[in-house]
Length: 110
Image (cartoon, rainbow, N blue to C red):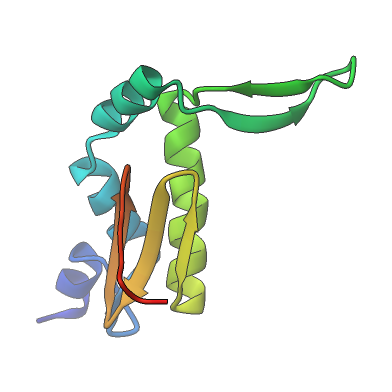
């Protein structure tokens, strides 16, 4: 494979770039379904406090979901770790970047 072909396939220094992987996840992830589930459950995130000192919270819109997931994915990619919050889990596993939205989990591990 030539240099231009590698660039076209998203490779940087022999590995797929973060931007390439994040774009693929963005295209494949069903953001609408996550937003529908969060709205149905009234799953609110805190967005800090307003000018009167009251908590500003609500169901995040799709763009906020994407922005948050992007930050988690970037951390997971750069630190080769897993990041979880607000229902999302972003991780890096053996060269694979992934994003999961979880409603329910269980484990027998302590």
